[in-house]
Length: 476
Image 1: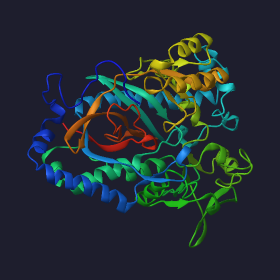
Image 2: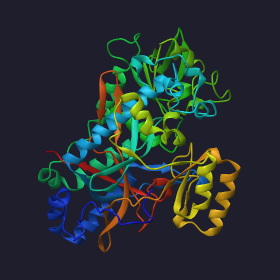
Image 3: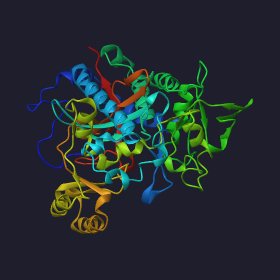
Image 4: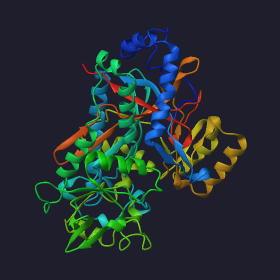
């Protein structure tokens, strides 16, 4: 998502065109390169992505189509000081989300205190009654979290949304770095960039630390994928391979002797931790969708009996619901006793009559999103929509107001991309990846920068034509 109004903050150039400190060393290097060589490297990067198959499946109108995710070779650079502030804010928010989930499925103190109206749970499909009264192994609900951040000024980062179900995109963060290191090795000797390549090892360690009490000294980990037709299948296979974990589908698992067993070349073996990339509804046909073939019959019984860890825990989706998001400043304060370090984007809940009226009156200036939406689908970007599109969306809003929230179109930061005519500014967001285990919170330095490749575009999602770039966090 990005700006429609106001003056934007450029992360590389000051108002008077001077290079900001974060980009000084990179720009020195860039200005010393031959432009035709840079163009050849740009084409080489695309060939590299095609060769290793970094694609995603498209849903919606072009369903079934596989697309290459465009990669831009100009890094997005964050200083050590900026990153310190960000990590404090991210850690505070992730702790609050975990405490919130523990509370929602137990005493619901936040509801009793009048800080969250009960109907936001009662009418919410992401709130799972099957999780009430149950605490996952180690007390961790969100083992892997993606926090989407946008920047609006020198020291202003805001959270656009929380991804607490099954955040994706980490494989692109890793491949973007690998590509950059292969193409420009001298850059990494010249500029001190913090590494990200150990993420799979850290992920495995974090998941093993969250294993149930019945696991041995070396808990086994498996990645549960819906299969090759899922849009993020490349990532599921990639992470399993990099972690040295088994990649399994529902048909490779069964429940036996109170454990989830995994088919191996030596017969069925117990699995301790399942990093699932299957939605709650499809996880267990006995507990949720009865016709699901993607999950494992009886897995929820084993889970509730403490026989397996499911990461992320079922029912965490309530924390990335966009109506719940609007309460996050309250949630952070309620569970940490501190003011939020990272601000929310102002949000109107269309379920409330006054907010709905305001949103309908100002649709041409707002961004409207589905409460459970993701990937840029089902949303309206007022400033770039026609009168006809706005009128059609207003009808949807009136029919199901509780299904939507609205936000202002912020003036978001830009970073340079490489174009045929040189560097040009484009809007970006950032998704840092956070690992949570009983041992603590581990934030990978950087994350996935998604970039809107079209001039002035407001949408960075790959499904809507956006690309990605390497995110550098500078060492001290």
